[in-house]
Length: 122
Image (cartoon, rainbow, N blue to C red; front, side):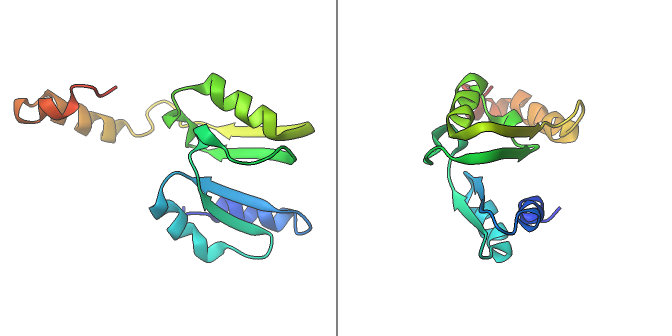
């Protein structure tokens, strides 16, 4: 799916509201930027350091939060930003998602010539 597509679809559902898409990757934000419009903007931001004030009616993430290590902190940050009655929708990757990627990385990690690069990898 093209970057920012789901966020743009959400913005289309709330034409009188404001939607903000965030990502820590400058490349992801740049790829989504063409979809920005009056009620939709994209901001480069680490989800662990949400720099917003409270007042959001909802939070949505699609297949990204499996990269976040401190879920307790994440939930506290999101909860702080939501209005009373606000809603959260987090979609996580299913079992086997990225399995080929993980197999290739694990194979590289096991090779002697690369092992030093992965000493602190999780």
